[in-house]
Length: 147
Image 1 (tube, rainbow, N blue to C red):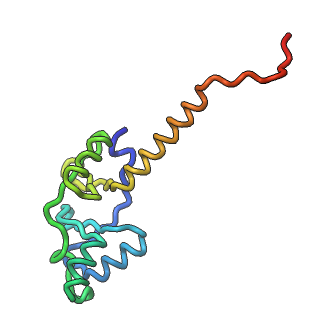
Image 2 (image 1 turned 45 degrees about the horizontal axis):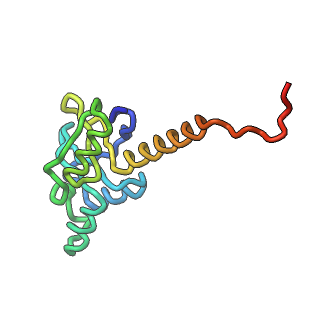
Image 3 (image 1 turned 135 degrees about the vertical axis):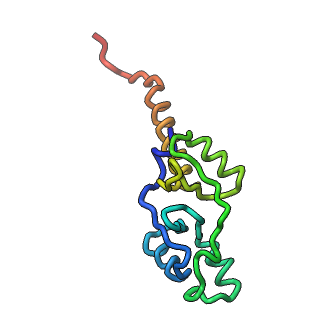
């Protein structure tokens, strides 16, 4: 399976000058843990709910005054839509990250999270279990009528 098959394509993006409080509201409203930061159509960073907590709130910074660009993660690890999901999962593990923005020809086209991969893995495991159960020979029925 390819990354494009499981990536989220309805992305929530903000500009670097967006207030952190506004970015946090967008995360809440979309029920997501990050916003992608785009400047002039180019991905420049990511701000996660953890960034808001650790880099802004815990530091005593006013999230209404703080700008996303000052608190986002800049050095992004990215993937491509034609990668195998296993390769993306391995990269997440190696880099110890939970989210992987997906670029195609330099354009932001999606994002894959550790949760997306876990859901896909669980679905594949359930399908394998069902196939295994279906493939087992049925027990003979006692008292079945033979002709």
